[in-house]
Length: 288
Image (tube, rainbow, N blue to C red):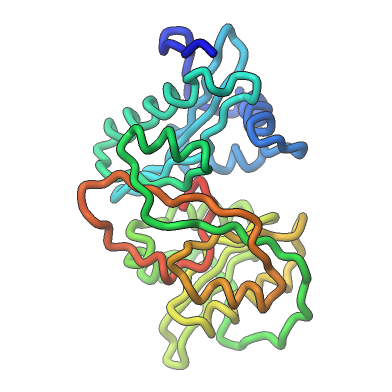
């Protein structure tokens, strides 16, 4: 296939007027039948100026984006229309995202790569540092008795979540928390120690569990029990860092099994002081 030149693509910011085009690209790229338009809109609300769609001759052919967390950016939603793959479109889009990140003054970038994407990202200086596993619920367990130390997250609790989460994730995620609470009210919980200190939280989206962070396995277990008592649109999935060795046996005990894995990659000058071993579930592959 002939490689694409930058001047043959028109890359524009993704907004409500073109989420339908982005949805068609995304479903074609990953062979998905169901619409992801609502999810694309949610990502645009995470970072309204950070998602882009590429057109060739007014036809949508690719999309990509990133979330600026201040300390680093998380790149995701990289997709190229299936018939247009292997023509250099992904590389042009990725370069566009990296330029956007640089203009934001952010020096570090993270992502979770498929096997195909990993080859591209390596060319731009990204290095593998971990594996991110996707687990899916196969057998729904009987719900255990409610834990009295598990409470529903309200907007007034975001400050407490930030204080607990920032040293673990490595950046402030207030905008993620607020957006998820707005999209999925009543579907987030936190747990506390006997002396009242927050030691974990979890969000349940309609098809996915995460973000989910806990400082102990018992706290993670209580939080998972709480969200599995909720209804889901389909059997939920969880994106789990490989560094968290306690997540695998916990999820398997609750009826989850591994589906596939991506490579967690980073481009940064120094080691980053986050704690993926305490992350039981990412918000998604695309947002960390």
